[in-house]
Length: 483
Image 1 (cartoon, rainbow, N blue to C red):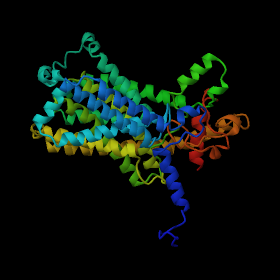
Image 2 (cartoon, one colour; image 1 turned 180 degrees about the vertical axis):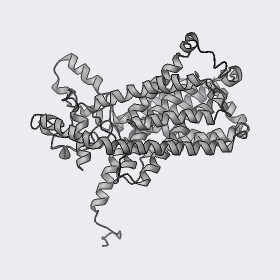
Image 3 (tube, rainbow, N blue to C red; image 1 turned 120 degrees about the vertical axis):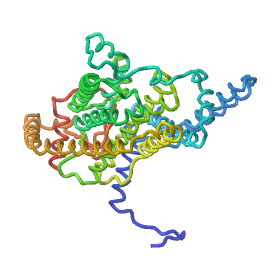
Image 4 (cartoon, rainbow, N blue to C red; image 1 turned 90 degrees about the horizontal axis):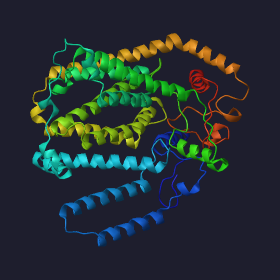
């Protein structure tokens, strides 16, 4: 049907509405119940005025005699103004806590890093070194750790002193990192699969990176069991604890004590809700299985980039370039995993979110930069090792998925019966929150449903109160199995 302006108009179908709604939930999440209007109004004119005035002040008052300082200030202001535009124009992503502007800035930083990698790829090696030396002149004297340290020596000598010497800041960061990974992935099966495949990755790439060489007791006991296993257990314990709670959020205006207001402000930096996550079930399609395999490959690639970057571009693990990148990748991984999980498991979500797309581009661009500027290193690559590594990752992935299917088929019915029994023992109208309302299991970090779908009660601000133990996760699992 043609409209009066010469454009073809059509009726938006139900599938289109569902698609837009589901994609918005992971790419443009909205704050549904605003209690402090000031923090969620646009303030675009005020922001424009402040940025222009600050630019005028720095442009006409600072000393311009130092050329390096001029470049630094110009670069910092370019980044700052780009982040201002990010706050105004970029999507919120899947999270809104502590504030959507924070996640817009995170997405803006990821876009800046992506553009920086594109720029670096088109430089030659001398230009790249000049850029690094300009950022930090001390990098001129940096040496590779593999050139001054020995790895996997005297592995038959096992003493308590030698074992305890491995429990340093890097071991703690290893443990803490796996705790954070478990919070993001929320699956024992996938976490353990990634942990084991990473140790295999170290073995297959040991001929390129000597620091991957480890004694058997270091790799099996300290890495897999203690650091990896302990971190996974800690992260999954926190996940189970958060799943077993129902979240009641009270407006800060309704809290009349100073302590309560401070607690409310602190809880703004915590998730508004927590969702039971299921990466795989017995009826999953081949596309979903392939998607999980791709997820693991990109995860391993991102981890490999960490070691190849500091080996090829020569900077120590304690340098700001190393730990800032690790921290940054960890932050952008949170919305990335959420968006990829929705794309993989939600049939109404037809494309990945923007943060997920940028993260994938960053991972491949980092690998491309390593290959371009490390041709001498990669010329020693044993192609057979890489092929066997890919096959091993695929085999372990499918074994993991088969184990998850077996667990669901064997223990699923019993778990369902226990959940139904618990639900029957609860008082009437108490499931899922206040006044018998339920929070649909659609999002990570906050409720993605509108107040209408939640029985008319919007998810306001906190005070969080624990529910009957096991009710939150049990209710969601029961609804999924019933559906």
